[in-house]
Image (cartoon, rainbow, N blue to C red; front, side, top):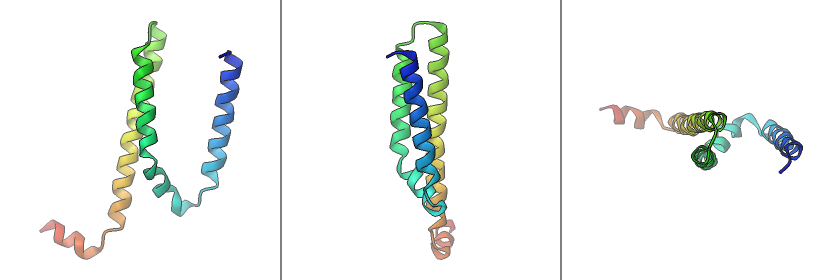
Length: 99
């Protein structure tokens, strides 16, 4: 794939993602993103595969950064899910769970 075509696809994907996420109501944003944690896992696997195929130091550095950011994104998604689910617990069940 030519560099300009890859840049065009990246810019189109970034614009489309921004427009779609920008139109999601605030109340649905966290459940929607926590429900898509599997996508973060796929991104992490892709970054690990890219890192495994790296041959130059630049490719290795970019692959390492990709794995690092992908892992942080996946972990952050699960933290957001846990916090969201904590909000839906009733106060009586929270008290019972502490004893």
